[in-house]
Length: 156
Image (cartoon, rainbow, N blue to C red; front, side, top):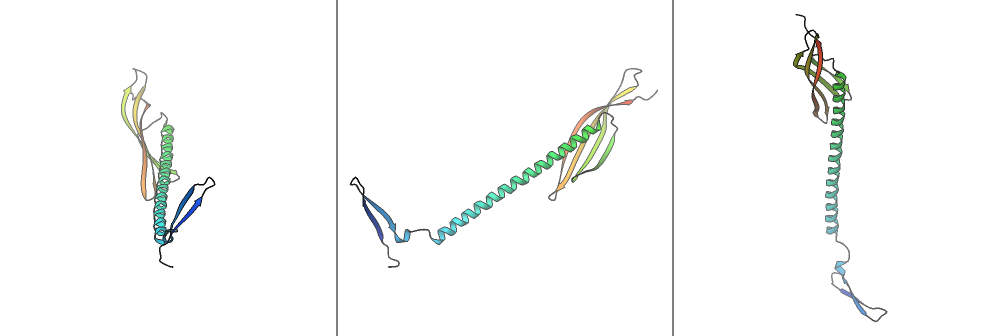
């Protein structure tokens, strides 16, 4: 009969003579209800959405880190290209790949050589900035260092 609760028990006897009773539950407790399946599906969907968001954030952070590493490598390259033949001023340009660079060289201090040596040692402050735009925002990396350059002393 539909809607009637029936308890089912099964008696079994093992080979050594022990008797075991197994309760198979009632007819209403066989399987999952539709509500239980829908709730389980909703929980699984929310978990999958959270996992997808976490993976997406991780990939975005990895890409940003790679862009910073690329910009840092380009900035170091520009510092090395300067060498010791420095002159005060500012230069800028496009480095390709969406990166722009700017080099600023400022004299910080000068020291005259010994009498008759004819040279001046100049301490320069050098700042190299490499910037790029992605995902609607602008980012940049700046390296600052000091370099020693030499110039001819003025005749007196």
